Image (cartoon, rainbow, N blue to C red; front, side, top):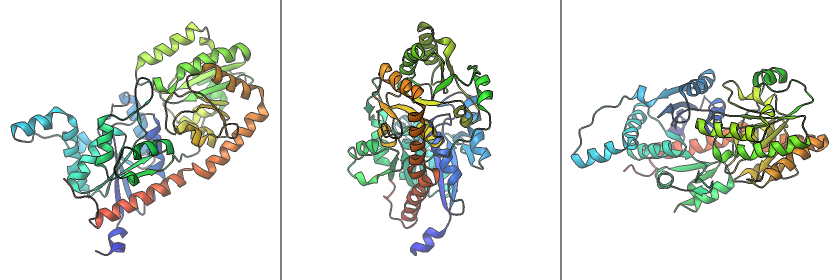
Length: 414
């Protein structure tokens, strides 16, 4: 087969994810979608279970951002309705016991119908389904994953993740530490590709004062706002930041804290609100979600705090760097790869409110240091974490997979 001719045709990439919410992977995928070269790639998004990550409103709000960017978003239940399949008794029990095989079968139908070259799965559940569909159809497949976690927030690799890593053609992750861990799990470690996040610089449409009023924050600009942006989920360490806030407010009362993110469950938000009340700082701590452009939230933040207990390479850190925001972050996962201590930010141990408070106070009391860190962070963003850098790497990855698939050089379907 002529290699040039087989790869000249526009490459069809189908991104598959359970649902759409306001979390890091959906932001990464949105930036990828916006920057892909549409003369070379036909790209669309397919959701498997729209309400996996949040409410119907959150899904609708997030989907609208994709649609506004000109990206086709479909739901598997709508484009391939489920139909009864007659199977022998044992096979029927296996097939119907879990939705994984049923969804993988329907995804395979769609892959054949649309002549998909690359199934670009995101996160473990969609990766398992995408991996099965690729084996059944001969399409290339890749999964973007960041590592699972346990209640102690240590890296955990359940069987579903391990199966996904083995089923797909290649694996993509965003930090060197996660890439190394995944390679150790595989017989063919070269299938793991490290492609860090590349994020567009947030461009606020609303002013600082408008956002202070939106969130009920002090309107006096002398009051500095410390903010954490990210889904309200236990491993993001919001409770650590709230405990640090009490220490900061005792020493620098002209400060307020803003925690913005959709909750995975309301009980965690309730816990955070109760903690702020217990510490008598509810008048200076706002915990809320924001359905609009996240850039508007950044307009009000003076110092970025990221108190995570578990992470890979958080999107919010990249966004803050793009905006020259001085930051105090924790030394978990791949964060030290992106934030260099005392050069592009302050890096503190996880789960340590006193260390987090000390870092925030240092930036509040030293505007020159805060400015230097912010400028250096912006320069590092420009060098490594722009969206075009990420997308060129992804395009090369998809191109190689599509060429192998079209030349019949991928693993044979099961």
